[in-house]
Image 1 (spheres, rainbow, N blue to C red):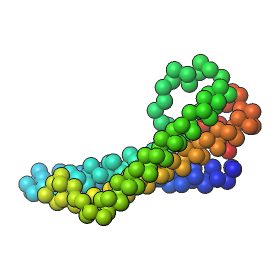
Image 2: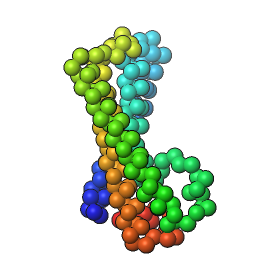
Image 3: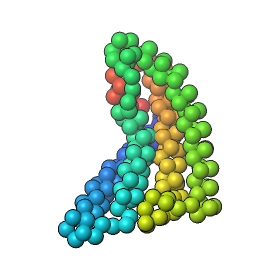
Image 4: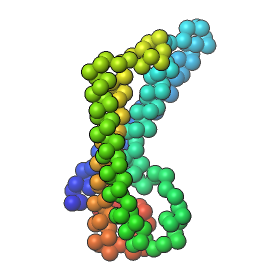
Length: 177
C-alpha cells in the first residue's frame, strides 16, 4: 500500500511542477501580449484565450498536488487544533471516500464532455482565433483524473496513519508513509 501511495504522490508532485511551469509560461505569454499591444499597437488574436486556458490548466493540474501537500482549503472549525489528531484522521477517513465518489463521477462526465468536443470539432467562439476546445477539455479530464488518484492515495495514507496509531502527529507527519 505504501508503494501505491508513494507512486501516486510522486505523480502529484510532477503535476505540481507542471502547474508551476505553466504559471511561468503564462507570465511570459502575457508579457509578450502586453508588449505587442502597447508598444506596437498589435495585440495577438490568441492572447486572451491562451492565457485563460493556461491559468485554468495550471489550477486543474495542481488540485491533486494541493491535496498531497495538505495545502487545500479546509474549514478549520474542527481541524484548528480543537480535536485530537486521531479524530481528524477518522473524519478524513469518513469524508474522503465521499469526495472520491463525487470527483470520480465528475471525471467520468468530463471525459464524455471531452469526447463530444473531439467528435464535433467544437470551437471556442471566444475570440477571432477561435481554436478547437478539445485540448483544454482533455487537460480538464487529466487534472480531475490526477485529483481522483490523489484522493485514493490520501485515503490509503490516512488508513495507514490510523493503523500505525497516529495520535498527536501534525498534517505533515501523515505524508511520511
